Image (tube, rainbow, N blue to C red; front, side, top):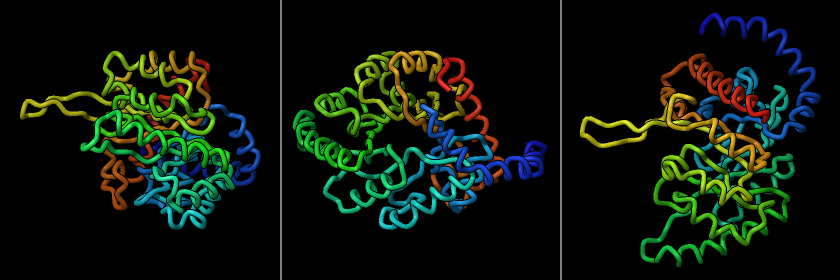
Length: 317
């Protein structure tokens, strides 16, 4: 690992450094043409400033960063007009970009919602992830869905106004989107060009087991952006089963089956690789991780290489 780092710092400092800084514009034009640019979910890099984050993204072969623009994120919503342009400038100066961001947006009437959408649109960012919605236990599931239909309708109109797309992540658990079928009820009358799903295969398999493909087929017209991660089930000392996040290819996600369906569904949009296994706390967005940046970078590159090779096998990259 150290020899690879030394090589990067010496050779890449000259070759990559010069080419990225002198040809950032042409590099970004190349990324504009890529149908499925692979991003790193920047939660694990929040301990870095924008420029260093951008260097790490470029150095480890990503096409861009899926920036956290939410409370506790790399860009705070209240500062989005000033700080998001700074983060994007740092990325583009290093020859990479951001085609997608993660937000906490779930209220179309919040003034910060408009600030975020306007700023991202001005910067040429088309895709964002919505914030989560909770089920009100005092209401039935159908009653909850009827209420949230209006939320999705209003967000669709707002997204159309700014020419952007909002994707709701299917996340395992008891919130909206856990079972994925509820998302169909919220989206079936909505325009996929402006609102849809940020499909997460890891969470889909957690909840769907062997039936996950049915949910993916159902939601396919609304799936634009996607999240990539892996996991296993592990029995604890108390004889209970728990989820354990693992590097790509070491868990229960069958990426061949997934990419076969992904390909046949004609999905063309940015991809975000998430790092949720142990990175010394960086995986939780901590500002003082116990793992060194070199070690973190090695894991970033490892999963990026794995997934890009899978994409190439299916002619998708």
